[in-house]
Structure formats: structure tokens, C-alpha cells
Length: 261
Image 1 (cartoon, helix red, strand yellow):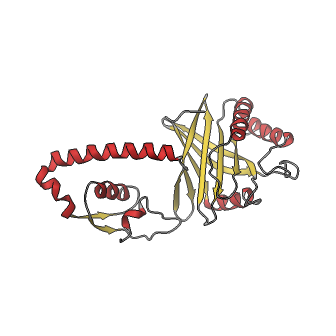
Image 2 (spheres, rainbow, N blue to C red; image 1 turned 90 degrees about the vertical axis):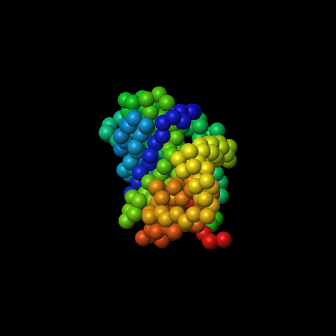
Image 3 (cartoon, rainbow, N blue to C red; image 1 turned 45 degrees about the vertical axis):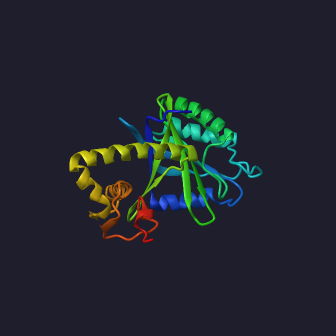
């Protein structure tokens, strides 16, 4: 199930997220649980924006409690099919993986998603199907992965947006091989940037980066990547200005850059 060119952003209200986590983590730490859910969607040139609306909570007997994994029974599936057929919203699946487990799809998850994608797209006359997996570690760290099937192709959920007093953005969990590939790509971009700085400033001025002090105002979506690139290009002294403090709802993109050694 490929389709890495497009991506999906998954958006949820903070209160809905808390209620959803209580639901799907109810058998933690060793057992999974899940739910169908309704979501609105908007197709874009780069993929899909999916907005969580409400869970279709499982009733007693809708899921197989004797199984350690999430098993949807036929009457629950039928109810979801009727929802996607009769309502303007699409239907997806969210389920948990056990504590300290990765959120990458198993073979069973692949089979489940292939079946639901076909059924819900058929009943919903082409509405997208969305599948998301949550997990938490012992220290409370949150992980997720997700994928959407729309108009005949699969592509990943790249970001998870929780909307409350502040906007919390979380990136999908990545495999080690994907992280290494991304690092190689970043190294290539850094080499290109360094060459362009040398060309722009001249080699003598460019070499002074290691003794320069750089000020950055704002350490979020633009400032953090800028600091990251400058630090890797040789700048060692920064003055960072930002009105907010680090916190669970306000994480820095590259916090390791800003911790004194």
C-alpha cells in the first residue's frame, strides 16, 4: 500500500482527542481496542485534510473482548457501512497498539484496511477511508501512524493536529530506514546550502560562521529549522528570542539545539 507522493493531515479538537484516547486505551497496557469514527474531509492538490467529527462507539459485543488485538464483529461493520452510505461524512478506524509498541501496521492491520477501504468506498460512493493507530510509551510519549485510501490510492497521514488553547502538531512515527533516508537528504541539502553561502559571502567571510553570533526571533516553524541549518553549517553562538516556553503543547522542532552543554 504505497502512495508517498500525497499526504493527509488529521485534525481533531483537544477535548475529542482526550475522550478518544480514554476509549481506545481502555485495555492498556497489553491489549488493543478501537472504534469506527466519522470524519469530514477536503481534497487538496497535495492530498487530504481529514477532520475528526465523532466516534461510532462500540456497543457491548461489537468488538471481540477475548482477543488481545482489535477485532470488529460483523454487526459493528454493518452499522458503519450504513453510516457511510446514508450520511455526508466518511468513516474510518482508530485503534491502539499495546504500550511501548510501534504504531506500524501489522499484516492483520493490512488485511483489515484493505477490506474496509473497499467496502466503505463502495458504500460511500467514493468517500475516502482513513485508518489511524495510536500508542503510548511508559513515560507517556505518544506515537501514531495513519494512512488514507482515496480515489484509488493509499497515502500516509503525515501530521496529527490537536486544536485547543494552542495548536499541537505531531509528526507520524517513522521507521529507522526512513529516518536515515531523511538524514541523507538533509545532509545533501546542507552541503548545497553551505556551497551557496560560500558563493554568496565569499570563502573568507563564510568561514567566519564558526565565530559569528546569530540572532533568531521566533523559534517555531521557521526559526527552529533555520537554527538547525545554521548550527550544522558551523554557527556556534545563538541569541534565541521567543515569548513561549517549552511544554507538551508547545514543543520545539529541534530542542536538542537549544540545551546548554
